[in-house]
Length: 148
Image 1 (cartoon, helix red, strand yellow):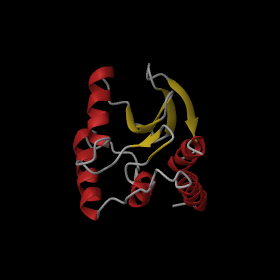
Image 2 (cartoon, helix red, strand yellow; image 1 turned 90 degrees about the vertical axis):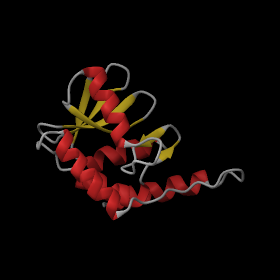
Image 3 (cartoon, helix red, strand yellow; image 1 turned 60 degrees about the vertical axis):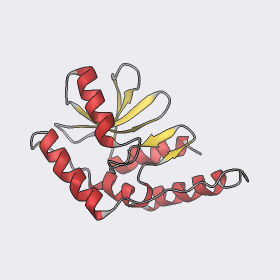
């Protein structure tokens, strides 16, 4: 995981914990969660699985991240905002598996285009493509900067 993401996570945690009524923290996924996630994506995406290793690395630190309206879905089935539930609902709504959702904020979804593996930002309400981002790490950085 790149240093910029770690720095942003530390800044968010510091800011969030300045509220005396709030104990902000995040948890990591387990190796079992990662194995389940990899098996599930291979099965659900029909063998055309984009490289999600950067997302997995993020989940090893902040699985199910949620701060200031920015969410990254958990790869743990037992957590409420998990990647499985969100993608199944998404694929049913748009009748396509063109994108794999990783998270969202109040106006955008963070996703990977399945066929190309490109990181991108979609309009939250319509699912329309907004822009491509250089990598999953940059996508995560962009979202975390909004959570500050």
